[in-house]
Image (cartoon, rainbow, N blue to C red; front, top):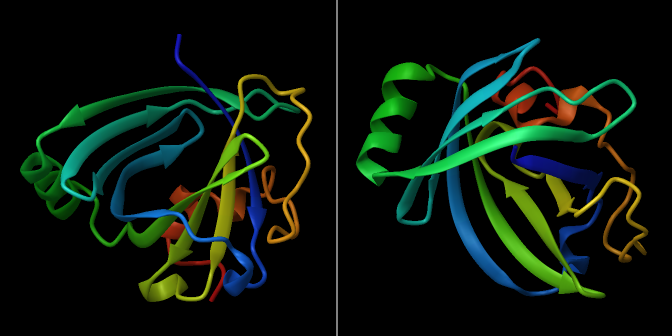
Length: 155
């Protein structure tokens, strides 16, 4: 089984985020509910479909299956299957203390929102937080990308 173990943090000041490689991302949500999420993503010039399960209570690891698909198919799926549940962001990948932080600068409806994510090998992995991160939001469902696609938070 593929497992995603991820922690997420708000970034109060984007000017403190170090430089890094940037990617342009558009992602749409066809489904999000009690069983997980189904999303389509355009990442630079590639397309992906991702299916994620829900984490067990008290944990943040969850099953994740991601597959590359033709970019044109991803664009079409976003347009035809996701309605208005689409988010736009620029992801900056920054290496800090041996970890690759993914910092998302949101555009459009959530302009100004910045979230840093860190994928880990195990839930009990010890990390030191860089100075650009603020409040941890891993357990706050309103800040998931699926919730943000509903455009009901952070406005």
